[in-house]
Length: 346
Length: 142
Image 1 (cartoon, chains in turn yellow, red):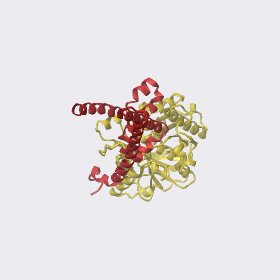
Image 2: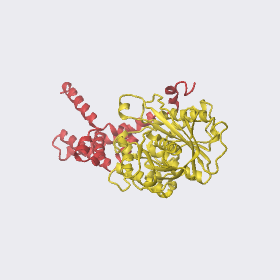
Image 3: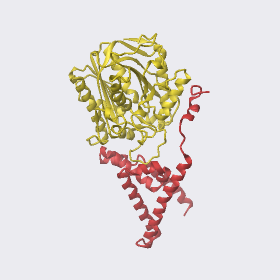
Image 4: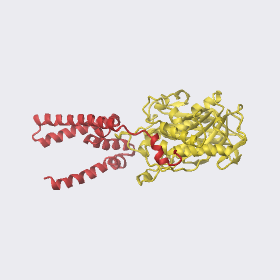
């Protein structure tokens, strides 16, 4: 493991995703990626009494299924890294309460999926853990009521608004060679473009995504064509166009291999405004669909850039702008790695 | 010129602007229809059991608010608001929806801290400033 350039970690010793799992709610199960998710619930309550308990259940089930797929018991995991959107990270802390694993709680808003994956890969590569488990979750109703309004309140939302994904994703990282190799991670800086509208987070997060992607290319001497897919977390219809334009202005044409998890998870006719968002958006698309596509050989190298709007309701009410962050992780199909960029040594 | 030179200004080209004319039309039609329904109810009550115009109007208000609460409970009022915008939020039915939605939302935290404590969180400002505005108007409008 070494640092390359300013913000990129390169894992040359072999760090692998041993297994991953995704649990989702009804709208996601009904979406175009529905068949790739391990666990699908037919209603938002997921058989629980409250939405918060439903979200916890989603994370618990994703973690359980992930460990089951890896054939590893919780006792054999050295570290658990998780985060979510609820105040005090309630979902993660309460799921960790049930696990006999040392726990680090991380908050990166919707960038948490790749934040935990990058941190887990570094800790495993550095020998501080043999196996590390990561998880993240979000729930449409818990996020709505915490960050916005009561779910049944009649408010006309603009087309720029996003729709929080209900789901949870978990991944187990280790050194045993597996199907997916974590090759590099680029840790993002907090970027605040000055936007203040919490119903247009795609535009608020796009500069952070562009910054991390550009930094990644610079650090590794890489170019967009080194990747089969560069995918952002939840920029949606508005932000995904902006990030492409920002990268084009910097001289990087990503139009051939760019997509956004928030656009992939729902069908165009599903009523989700500009697209999906939330911690679970990038987590379930990556751990459910993208890993499946890597394993079957449709892609060889992905760059997943999870984007987070570091939104605080109090700060927004005090007319403060919305800071944003993006963390990227390069995942490759193990055993069939493409030729790397020249100077990065990837 | 580009996004990198002045993001706040240039990004506006990427943000879809609300369809103001269509929104105003929908608000007028739905808001107008709801008001017409309330007026019809008031007239009907006035012609049947209500002993005064005030009583007829109060009954019409109660029925309209009840209707909005019912639609909120079955999860339909927010869909109407998404379509009609101000045509559904600015009416008495919008206030009923604000109180009912918050009450339903916080039932999970119990009757006191949840329903009681949080019920006014969405509609409280409308009530406070509504009462103040009514008082000020009452000073000049006997």
